[in-house]
Image (cartoon, rainbow, N blue to C red; front, top):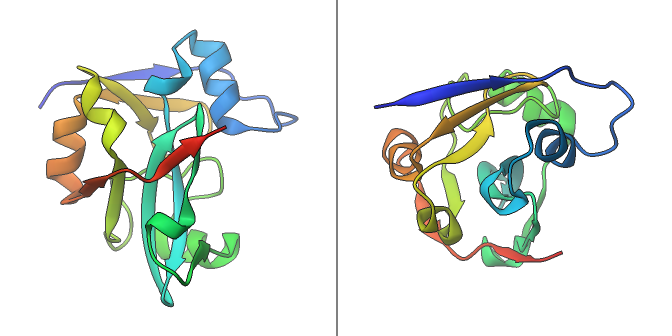
Length: 139
């Protein structure tokens, strides 16, 4: 598996971690994927969608909603804005928006604010055993 790390100086006043990564790394927003922790029928899952989109929570289940940040952090081992789909304390079921497969590489969070990991989306799917489906909606 091939990958590259992309670092930038995180601004603590940034309102959106994904938008900050897009701006500071000068990458197209549809190739930078944000990692969201979601409660689906009471169980935590991870969803990766482009920064240019929003998560369609209903695509994950009728009783799906964004998880509480503290609960998500305890479960994944990451802080909000630094959650990676990889290297969690316990790998959560993962969902990747199907648009990821349109690109040779995408960026996902590398495990802290200001760090992005560039990799082939097929490697991300393989490493996380992700389900690939349409989970993003227009912004």
